[in-house]
Length: 385
Ligand SMILES: [Zn+2]
Image (cartoon, rainbow, N blue to C red):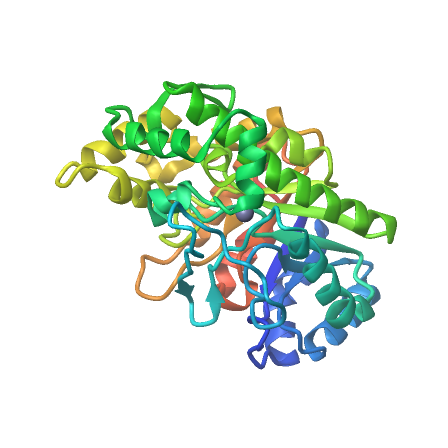
């Protein structure tokens, strides 16, 4: 099982990440035979990439640029934010100091062009082996119904219109969803696929995922033509349809996908963080806990026992849906003030990834913030069971 590690080097403005810090963080991995590569981004400062390029070349490891697609580069180009019913950009939220979650529209032709210009100007010189595309999605529904019903700009609405969905129909769809007893209108979920009570909602989600796939596909083609491999950072399959990610379609354009099977961390993309957030955003007042339980049940996500069964089931769902390699994304740390992720938990995830047939595992989301003992647990070969 190949093992990759993610290094968060700060936003475009860049934190000052020293060589010493990177060397120390990577030290427990160096002895691991399974160590296959480093995924690092997305400061535009050249120094960390220069050092990492040398480090990875000398050891025969791959170096991937961790590149957020639909957020984060707003200061470098006039990306246009996703719009809600009001016709105004929704705006974003900050996280962990300098991460921004201000999503832009995938459909406007400028979006992809801006990103590729940024890549050529700021990153191409480093001769990466591949790109790891993150944030290829709409804002998460944990941000509220307005996020789930974005983007509604004229370009996106034209695409929905081609599927027979008008703005008025989508407004009615949102209102039905709010009044619906079943969380997010989910009837059932089998083999990773949902059935929804409202066919218009199902059709909207499909259509919206098509917009993300179209952009990801254009970008993947562009990078492949230049000889770069393409990996995709995706929400766990049970969350993916609500952010516009279609595993089956996206995987046809990628060399590998990494489902974020984050079951411990109480941060964005964490499975239970997002499900709780959806409950807060969609449940009637005072019914959040019951809504959360029902949503977990409908999605097949058991929060019990640290979410281990959920991790394994989501990995199986991703493998069943995908036409490319699946690397299990697991968290090695969380934010300060939350119960820390332990070495035992990381060992459990590595073991589940191996038994679940994952082609590899990715240590997320920032090796530089992970305690040494969880990195060691990640580096070890899983014990046979
Ligand atoms: Zn749009």
